[in-house]
Figure 1 (cartoon, rainbow, N blue to C red):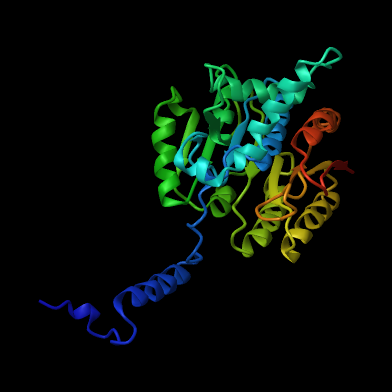
Figure 2: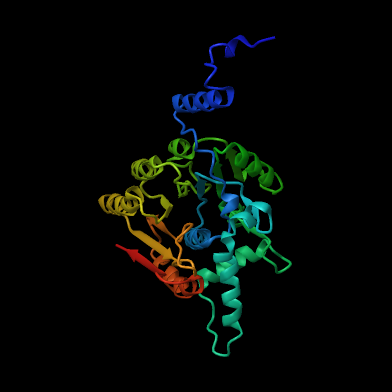
Length: 337
């Protein structure tokens, strides 16, 4: 029996090629890029970009939690939530070797020295968080932002965590991983486009004390060039919807015009809204063989940055930057207005 629905396929095109064209057109009509689901963070878990992203995330939230009012925390591109560093994905990517593994190794060597200095507060908080997921002392698991944020939720303040992940595989993994937590109603998960869903989350609902507070993490894969524009547009929209929120943006530093312009656009938007900002960047340098394969630099931009964050990040980067440096061309910076 023949399927009449496929009778129109040209013989030379072939079924496989036809299906590629069909789904490309199908997703395009729905507003999605046909290759937007190719990125899997499991290949990159624990890399140098994760280190600065989660260092900044923890330090920012710790400051915000000094006030009693509950916080609505939103992660627009949540990923799977928790990753095995000894799993197939991580071992294939191998990026944790230049990230969390190298950091831990360098800090162990430094600690053995007689004149070793105390680890800066923000960096220690990050290390403590990673250690809490690895009680045996070996770094086998790496928590993504959803698990880090869940660990920091305050039950008495009734902090809320809202997670969005559109990748079909990662969204299922996220739901399965979060199901193992005693989260109750404090976490909401949705398989939705985080860019679009963010709009309906702001302004946040009042906390138990009546105040409205929000912190948002935006960290798409940037595999699609339009992501850069969407990030800037989202920040502009967020500042209109809820001007007092704190917004964190991770971005790659790569030789692409859109990537080069993004931090400039974020600075302009923040300055126009008269909001304090911080821009942390880290370049670990070229590979030891001189090649530039893979991501070697990224940044974290914070809009409405807490006033104590700048000094804490600089103290942390004075240790973190040299620890992750390799080859030539390594650098770090913490800018602010």
